[in-house]
Image 1 (cartoon, rainbow, N blue to C red):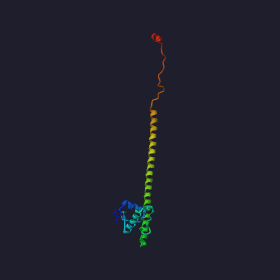
Image 2: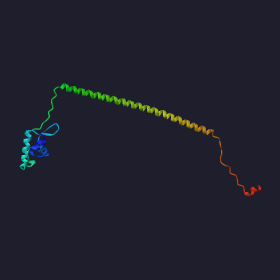
Image 3: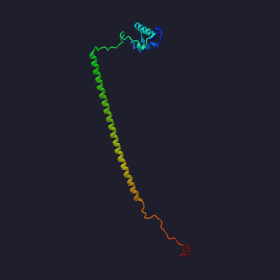
Image 4: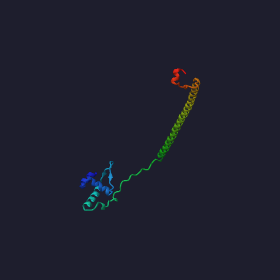
Amino acid sequence: MNTSEVAKLLGVSTSTIQRWVKQLELPMERNERGHYHFSNEDIELLKKIHEQLQNGTLIQEIAPLKEKKIPRKGAVKEVENNQALEKLFTKVSELELNLNSKADSVASYQLLQHRREIEDLQHLVKDLTQHVELLQKQIDELKMTSKIEEPLVFDNSKVKRKKKNIVSSLFGF
């Protein structure tokens, strides 16, 4: 029987049945969906609990009968064929070794690729430095030739002349 059927049988709610199972830690079986599945023995136990509660006993005072029912425990089957297990372990070990060697080769390849890229960049920087030096020399040479081609002028300032007096300029003195 499921929880709702047992609750109808006893005249209580489904949450009351669930609360009794949890609070009294009753070892009830569950189905594949996790719902309680009550056998005839479980129903008799719940009827006794219900009677005790009807007679005024507190739920904390009810001692669950754990000795009668032991919860199910899963058992691990012993491996019948140890050779198959050993074969599996060796295969896993081989796969791990192959994986590690593949990872090492990939890392090595990446390091070599980065090294090549760095060397290419160093050559490019060297070529650019030489080109900049050449351009600097050409600029310096152009400055030197432009200074040579300029005409020599000793003094470009105006000559200061004496101012003549108006009277002397009129009479020509």
